[in-house]
Image (cartoon, rainbow, N blue to C red; front, side, top):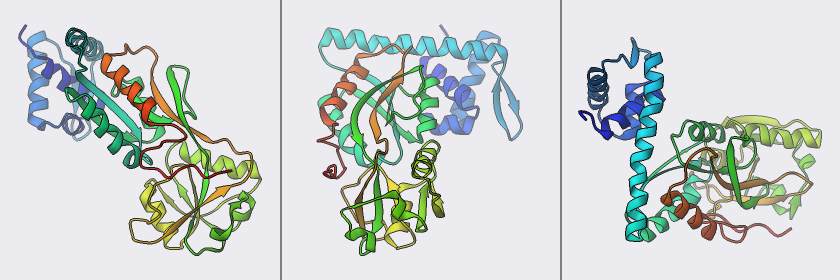
Length: 310
């Protein structure tokens, strides 16, 4: 056999991203190494795997599409060797790719990953983040093994296990008149300058709450970054709605924030674990899921403030 699993992994990265540059970033290796691996595989098997588009990346040939699936099957089988070793040695080892929703990635993941690695030092962890929509797509393309995300919009091909319930709250600047209220009706935000968390699916969720209340938000800013949103609000530029509740009520620009309970019968966001139903579960994945169950609940959310009493 005159090719390596590493070369297959580089090819898979290029095939899934459609770009040598993005593949290089994904596997943290130089672009020439990615190109060399692809050329070697094409020579070894006598196949053209990609069509090269000048300045527009790569696209798989029909043979390349079939080769990509076969390469992913080989890599998955190779990873299964770690399960055999884990069973023989009673220790958990091997790789795991975890995706997490970007708004709570800096809150949950540092403590969660550090404690898991302390328990299982032989596990090779690779953590990425993104929007809810991008995480679902990564699951379907087997780019990640498991995602920590919200239940909304999960499709039938995805298995979801709930861990905690996060009700939506109103985010206001400290000293704002609304901060003096114990709770707020959504109707009280009518006309207030509003900063929208503009991420796929999250955007639709927050706008649906306004629609349910029969009012339209007065949107003055859109941002896909939760910390930018908090800075806007802390500076008094507007108010917002959020579900993740950072322990710190100080925005990155040093301004102070307050969390106010949202009144009304609005659906909460359910935080949990998602994985592709057809994906074979490894012992590392089983161990990480068990770790999440132990660490994440309504009573215990790493990096987040406790739920506000209703």
